[in-house]
Length: 209
Image (cartoon, rainbow, N blue to C red; front, side, top):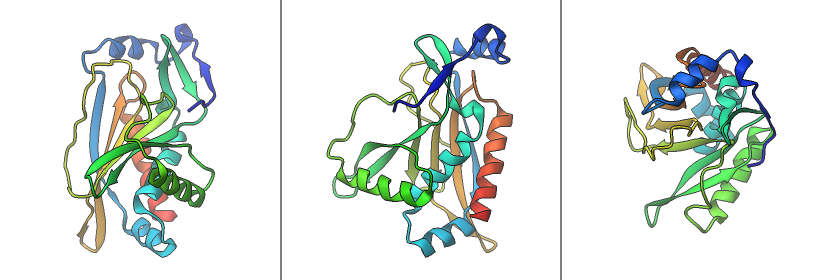
């Protein structure tokens, strides 16, 4: 959406070898699914009368933006690091059962983001506004399914590096509300340890907000 970035000096970059290997893989993106405890988050969102979906999108974006590896992208053959990443999410029209892709810049507070996201989504008339921007995270909720695994459409672009986040229907277990969550990333930039960092940040934010 026009966020500032810096071009990485590839020759001195610590991930040079990893990027060279995974950049040329047939399927360089990989997806990991796990569960999050949303008990406290669900209660807090309800008390504030926020949209669960919009509040969760803000939460993911805030946590992912704090991890450098989630802000790397390919741009015109170079590797770049964005200062901040915005949001691009699906929004369902319940009457037609068709979704539209809505782009909303991240805000400095959850309240501002939830409000802007809802207004933008409801006022957008077209299903697609254009190709997916480079400086976004992609989001899609599946509130009808408590999934254990998810995959995504592959358009054959090996340099598509925008992380994709999905979550499903939460369920109650031993007094807690657990929710399936999945993240797809490009292996040139993100390893398992970074997904682990995201999982820890997310759970801590959900517990303490």
